[in-house]
Image (tube, rainbow, N blue to C red; front, side, top):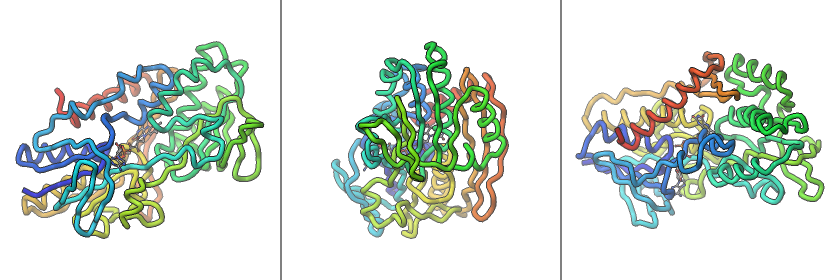
Length: 377
Ligand SMILES: Cc1cc2nc3c(=O)[nH]c(=O)nc-3n(C[C@H](O)[C@H](O)[C@H](O)COP(=O)(O)OP(=O)(O)OC[C@H]3O[C@@H](n4cnc5c(N)ncnc54)[C@H](O)[C@@H]3O)c2cc1C
């Protein structure tokens, strides 16, 4: 039986493992390696930070993962040799016939001067969870939600955060004495979806979220409590919520797999330039946004290709660049954006208006993944 080693048990790695298990059953020899003890959906970070769910409700522990043929190994990956398909971890060395890299993007709040000293970030699990108390204590003032570098995952998340911040401050009776500003490096909130962007801009205007497109915050001045923008402007704040700098994990940079920071792959097969070594999700430069649904779609294609090659079938599955994203609009409503990215073409897609029904769909989306990935139910 071929040895399949999956690095990273996030959106992409979990989808890979469950598909391989479904296809191969207990005959599979799949090692799924992650340094964390649990998986947390990106969107669940917003739920915890805005007090909609307790932290304990959004952690899915890998010890509960039951997938025939899949062995979860909790360990830190120290080196990856893509030529030998050999991986060294704190739990030993793993040799693979097929190696799949799904290690995501590492986040570096300390790479933005002043952010750790006088601001907050909401992209890491500890950062988002810690914000819950900070937001409960905040008694109003100037709030900035801002991006500090590109690329960054889930491009809609800063817009969602600004809208949920409006709800949070309104519910606590603080909205009248607060300003919310959203600073983004993009020209519109969700460039691949003009309809979604238009709906967001309209909502920002309705509720008074100040929108600053094509701007980046490069640092914070802790003494003066101002955000320092890349173009030289300054914005004073009482509460700063930042999207931190993203980089491929150091172990990927050191492996020789990355070019210009991220792993290039064939956009149709997700194979790297090393035969039998694939990469999916945020760690790649495949051309789709860094979001879980794209990692999941890419993992499905790689799993199908590995399964076909093990069965000596024709290997035909190809990645089509499609993804769907739920968008928190506040007041219990969620919208839906479907976009397809095809290399060399403008992205195309559709937008479904925000509604409570789509909020229920989003909950089902998460629950169905947990059932599929963890084998429960
Ligand atoms: C606030 C927020 C909201 C979001 N909302 C959405 C949304 O609504 N929809 C959506 O599709 N996406 C959303 N995302 C984005 C989504 O979370 C990521 O794009 C997605 O998780 C990427 O999947 P991945 O498999 O590439 O990497 P990840 O899910 O990040 O998994 C990478 C794994 O690799 C492990 N790892 C890294 N380095 C090592 C190492 N050296 N050794 C061992 N293990 C290691 C990590 O522990 C991690 O578990 C959101 C993100 C944020 C921050």
